[in-house]
Length: 497
Image (cartoon, rainbow, N blue to C red; front, side, top):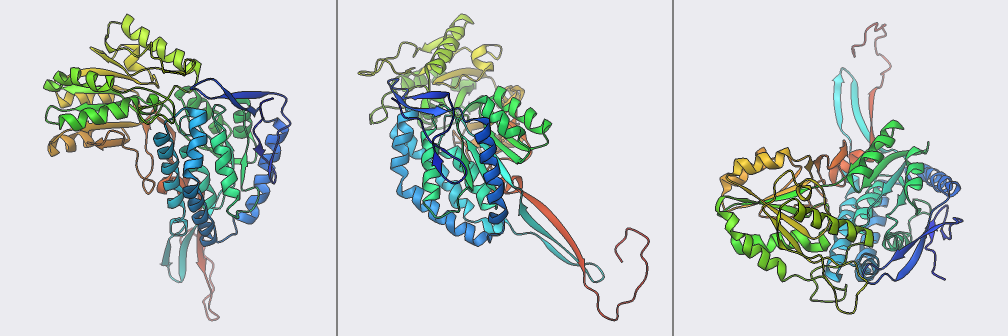
């Protein structure tokens, strides 16, 4: 009988009382690895209650002590990086190098969370009025919730709970039901570092569990990463229930290729950014915009993509792994057929991809369309697979207008040797994260991840200084201390005197 993965609720890891569970399969061969329980509503209540109780003590722990524990945690994650990556490979199909990168980008956020004492500093002004001082305190808000996606099961949980914990909060994590083994390992290692029990609760399940956490009377803030429809649902439900919320959603990221760009570097970057991780990244480049004479590079892009092949996680020659599920594979295949039907030129078709000795894997080879227009489904919709589409523009201005008309605003890049073109692009483009000769401009964690438009719903973005604001409240104190000879008089106005 397949093992049911544990939850962490009210003091330790244990088996859920749930009567239903979800099979977690290896997408390279369909082997069932574990089952994940649909955590019961009573267990959800227990998890939130335990987190709320733990909050009252944890919020009083000095920020410097919280930082020291996080330093131990980041060291523990580094020691176990390969172990975590192997678990991640089994349940996502990612190549080992890609899985290591997933873990490392999360470790970088934990390292930044270790700086929390300075990030929690308030402000002080002396003598705002005679004998009166004003100062502010940055304080934690309570029980926070994280709802994370399948495509980065290490990095994105590590975007969330370490920084929330650093700020003095407690946390309930509901990871993707498609790959929960990696988050379980992250929480296991967390508690090996000496953190008090119940700071992080871990539950599994689907929509019902998500909705219960969002609407629970004792949860204060919701962090979400996932698709646009689910992100919109989470945002609406959270705001209707008066919760603080940040939702990172879908994307349709463009790379503008100028004729003066370094051809070899540009094509190499485009290949990796479009089909790396099987295209299952919200920052993947899915549209190449060839400006002017750069369209002559399309055959070279096809040739470079054709050299990439998917394969098993431990195949050193594989460029990427399988799609996360058969449903995801079938959805992507449907888009490929739709692209053909709508009149795009299929330069490279990965629909019939096979991998030796893994006939049941969710494989799709690199796929490349040219002669694409903005009315086609393969341009308008997020495919989330190894499918690159090419559009042409006569000018940089035309490329900027095309991108700004797109409803998404997660990431964009331009490849050029012209400083003037790059500066105009970064100024005029209506996208939150811009790369100049960088294909996937995900900021390091001392900045914030700043998607725009339909790629983000909320006010404060994840990690960096914005996340500290998201996970805290500001309390402002105005104080006067009277001397024994101070004059006494009634102040009948709101003015400070």
